[in-house]
Length: 304
Ligand SMILES: Nc1ncnc2c1ncn2[C@@H]1O[C@H](COP(=O)(O)OP(=O)(O)OC[C@H]2O[C@@H]([n+]3cccc(C(=O)O)c3)[C@H](O)[C@@H]2O)[C@@H](O)[C@H]1O
Ligand SMILES: Nc1ncnc2c1ncn2[C@@H]1O[C@H](COP(=O)(O)OP(=O)(O)OP(=O)(O)O)[C@@H](O)[C@H]1O
Ligand SMILES: [Mg+2]
Image 1: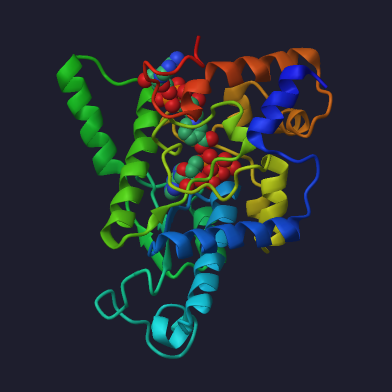
Image 2 (image 1 turned 60 degrees about the horizontal axis):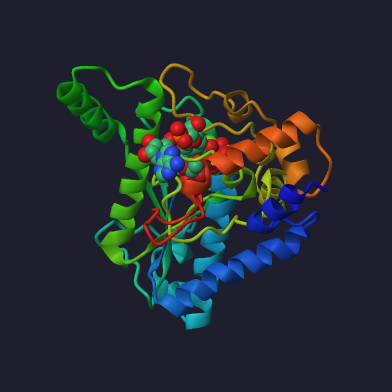
């Protein structure tokens, strides 16, 4: 194995093989333990319809259920949320539902479309599968368009579609923190080895989160975890897309990256990949180091 490959694998924490059942257990345990030790009121996560948020969302829901059980909070006490789901009793209204608290941690799954999303039907399938305590929809169009217009007014030039894409990711971050901050929940992020290694996320956008339950997995392992959790095939097998561009909705990550997840996954499992592919992965890893640390200060020298 290449020397740098070994170092990158250690940083990403990816194992050559996983037991999906065990990974689900470990990751739910991690989230539930974190709630217990911090006293947080649960989690918030944006659900896109992609495999990463499908897997992370279901793990978060299972974790709050576990945390409630361990706190001795029965569904009847949690009231209205889990116990009445799908039952005959009328669903409680926003006013009558108990708010998330450290005694009653809850998971909020939030749809964050920019106007109407091309794959909205699959996003709804993900919401149904995750079966969160609280479902929300917050359209980011007003926020993004507000920044876009102010940008043009301030600079005299229109924001590029690419740069606007990063604004969308950052407005999603703002929306998730607003929801989480209201009742003391934490923001879940979906970063994992195959995205982290290439820096394929928006700095302080989808990269801005409190807990990362998928970290240490590569993309095929995230799919295996989603399948293990019981997600429909259309979601666990879905083509990954950042879906940030007005000009090319649903553009495949692999197309933008110029790398395939098969190659990235093999590389992270310590397998041999074509030399030009390994060179490229290592080059993007190096270029994106600044995204995987806290902001650079005068006291550091890792960047030299
Ligand atoms: N050396 C350095 N040291 C410290 N900071 C540095 C820096 N170089 C750039 N920067 C800063 O970082 C900024 C660039 O980073 P960033 O704003 O993230 O922008 P950038 O990396 O150019 O774009 C984000 C990429 O991630 C992809 N993405 C985003 C969101 C979600 C997903 C997905 O898979 O779903 C993918 C997106 O398609 C795009 O290719 C610069 O504007 C600058 O402020
Ligand atoms: N339209 C959206 N609605 C809600 N959340 C979103 C949306 N788009 C992106 N996000 C959030 O940003 C995260 C990063 O997007 P990313 O595309 O990497 O993940 P994904 O869509 O879940 O899976 P995949 O990478 O396979 O497409 C998502 O996991 C989700 O939490
Ligand atoms: Mg996506």
